[in-house]
Length: 137
Image 1 (cartoon, rainbow, N blue to C red):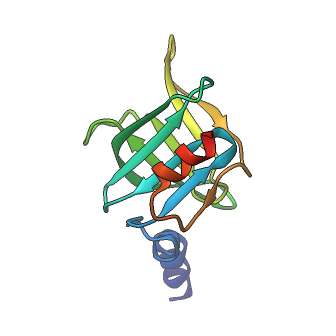
Image 2: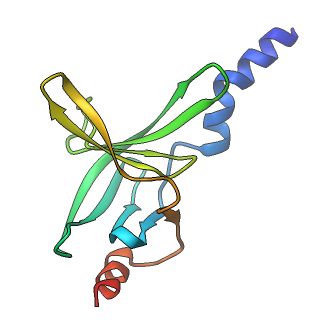
């Protein structure tokens, strides 16, 4: 019986603790002028700013995934341009808020770390788009 209980918590505890519906959550990467506004249970508004401080604001789909390693689980938010397509544009590690960008290479899709751990945080800002625009000034 103990084995079954242990197995249950090993498999299901990350989703119980973290939850898959991120509606209302906002992640801000202030130094990079990037932001993510999870406005529904499967969509996120991404604010991506380039080196010239020009921002692109686009709606994406997202889903949460949990990859298990030998000692821990790695919870990711995968962000897709098109619903039901398996090639993510971005991945956010929910534990560290590291942002990875997926790019096409000769060997297929490859993850590139674009914003390292420690540069993004969850915030309580009503309008993250306006907040980022004000930071540019």
